[in-house]
Length: 343
Image (cartoon, rainbow, N blue to C red; front, top):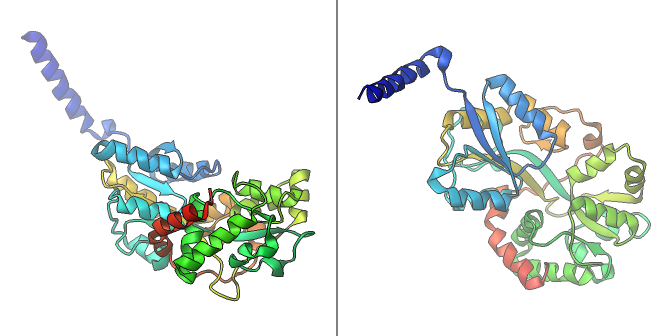
């Protein structure tokens, strides 16, 4: 009995000490992130320095994180989810994973077209999906649009990554929004017919394939291209000299732009920290870092960045359909690439 009384007494004392300011529990944020960029380390460190909130992070692919959250259910420790594609953000919303955030700061700084209208998710950076071509094999006019990649004149000259990759699905979903499902499927089948090789690798691999002459044209996200522009490696500098960049569909609906975004999770145990983190990602400091650290464009329009290589891409006409639109079209896009055999 004395041992039991001692244990109860010790527990009560410990509990009372934890309530004292000097024994306050450490503030933490549990982050699930699909942003696989090493340059984001400084972004997270800056948040901790500014707020005192330590970040526990799990990095994995979009699908892996969504599957993990589904398995964890109500017991998930995750507070915030960061994904690198609007279709995945939308998919997670359909799975009921989010808790809407009401934040005057986020609503004021993130444009309406770059966030969910009910505050379920917010876009913090953008990247464009552009066409790169071999300067010896083709001219810019030969590949001035996404639709041109299906032209029979390019038979045996096109390289892409898998049609089921999120970056490609979002593009297919956007094309379907503009051209209709039937035309989008015909376009996808035309690209498959024009492939120089089976879809493989990431965006940098596509650029290298174009430079080597394995194919003559490919698709890439802009930040992969800017990384190569910044490279001091002789072989990558030579690669850039051989390859040109085209902003697709400048005379029609504009170039496809995707987002990297985040959301607070429904079962977040640290909701206050989650909102602070999302608000931090909309701050000038974080927005500039998206540009300087990973060569993406900030979504906050008032932010000015100085990234010479990113700036060298110039201005372009952006597709004006919002990320939510091609997010909703993603199931249709998957059906299109499946029927086209774009593996």
